[in-house]
Image (cartoon, rainbow, N blue to C red):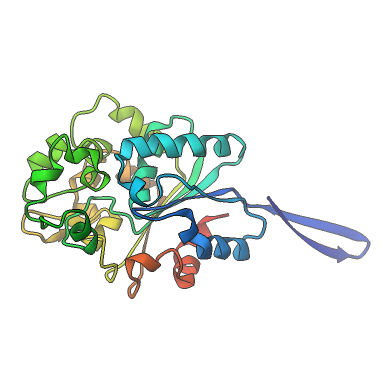
Length: 286
């Protein structure tokens, strides 16, 4: 869309036009598109005329469906928008949606995503006793959930697709049908192509913070994660970065990997906090 600024210089009329790329928002676990009214408004205020689409798929309990199924459904909705955007699009993907978007970016060979903004998403996995866990699995805690998640039945539940138990790494690597494959932690015949596809993005923006209260550890939102002593190992010391298993190190070397950390933001408020938007998101939507 166009934003035109008119100015009169002597007898010349100048039109300076700024074209904003379409923005697509992908929600997280138990959300609906209606939860993103504020984010939609922030974008329209700062970038008037932007075509913003909040995808209304896999809402509420449907967000528990396997992530590969969600990747297929969201990609089908996103692809026509991409085709109609010659200059590319931006993706803002919240919480679990950030992992769905990674699946799309890895498997779609001709995507034209410019900024992939991952908003408090468990990119390195999840391992914590949260309210979500208690609601979904009332008989389990983080230390024994692997008994469910690392089974064929468990892998049909979205949260188990990225459950990453640091005390059972071998089980995770061999059982995870989603995150371990995306991370290229398990041999995968598509890994080279997926890495090339993912690296088509122009910017990866990883947003998170220490007061999130859901993403555990919170550094997972920036590809940090626990070792087997539950000590957080930052992204740059993670094997997936050091060995550049799916492109993180390449993005860093290109200068296209951005970390934005903010304290004082609880998980459910990342997409409705204007300071988060202005600090971490706005500049990447041009």
